[in-house]
Length: 619
Image 1 (tube, rainbow, N blue to C red):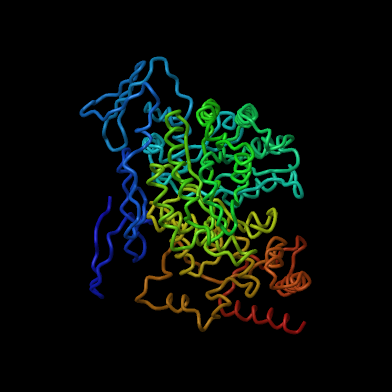
Image 2: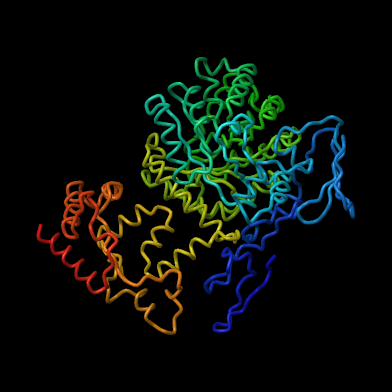
């Protein structure tokens, strides 16, 4: 643990207490993270793990964990000097990640089913081991302890584990995760298109995927997505519950049968909008946009029509029993989330959040894993409060937030308005971010919308992880910085998240990999000049050096498509540009530039680029 202040000798200013350095090797000159020091610990003190400093007036974390909400017949206590593990019917004693020992007593003959139940018995499951392999800043014991505390979930339905699922974790001790929504609607898409979007979302970094289909063959689409996915799959089961019946006719039998069916298919987590209570409905009367959650609005109408309480709330323990048998994780839905800035952090939203805390406790007593869904549309200044109130009311259960969007006036760009809020949300405590695409509020996202949403949210998640000081999260950034300092373009592109786009943008103006880029040109390139200053270490790392410039091959079809979608050049101009580049540098029979791998000196490279520019100007 690092907890120190540091005074800069040049300015005399004292830096705030420093957290973990996100660079494994503490490269560069930055002092490290300004987040709180890491406190990965199995008990309540673990609530501070990778957390931001509190603005004055913020709610403080709960001093309770899932250990405080055990099933009937269970007890637990910390024991001094146990020295050895005990594993016998009705009792377990095991060592925790901080060296303390815990004793758990339980009913005789109990067999764990869920990841939470295994963790409570000190068992490290294969899924916990896999999480630790994927997140090397955590040990398998720490993963188990976080699951036992309820601060981490591993959504891994037992059926889905038999297909292609690669187990992952959601929790503040782990890296921030990104969810991608998709699904067929009554007017758009279908099963094949949704499976294609699934693979595309995985390609661009989605950690989980939610199938929100409301049209077509929902059962077939869900089955295909589960069987083809490497990531956990979530659903909102009420969508299927009302297919083929009137909402008014929804009853306990239909609810439980639908949940059992989807759980047996292999769904890893369910969004259940049980927190929308009948007593909450008057709170939305003066909202500008009412209830924007589909599940929340459906259940609100059911309650009004029946003059009765939300059936998801009254059936909660029965729902828990179904989910426990398959180890389906709760994603307790925010049915009263704000749909515009004017409705953010209002009485309806906060009343529901209080109920979500109650439902969390009830699910933990049933041995079911829980994460909580959050808003929505929230002004930037209110994000920290929303994140930290949740950790208080829900005892640190992972928070899974949509955005939040920090402004409402940019339809078509809401992947940007929301990833701004998402970065703040993750820094202040959210564990998973639900992506928003450019089509949000406008229509069902297509393939490229999925890519844009995933990338925007990978930016948000990664930025928050670096800021929080999660070990090793800045390593790739540092590698790319060194490649950039050395003007090593190939390494630069290789380390980028989207190499094709980076290369396409570079080659649009300059198809020579030399010691400058098209933004400044040779004479004005500060990075090149810094490299030549002998007092500077910048750009001198041996592993990143390259001696001579080289000519790039002509734009690939993928790069032409990237630039075409960007709208800078017309398709005709792009094809003309590509053909002229090939002509300028020569072409082999296979269509590749003949000098693609031929090295030339920098002066020759500049002259060649001038020739290419002249050819373009003459056209």
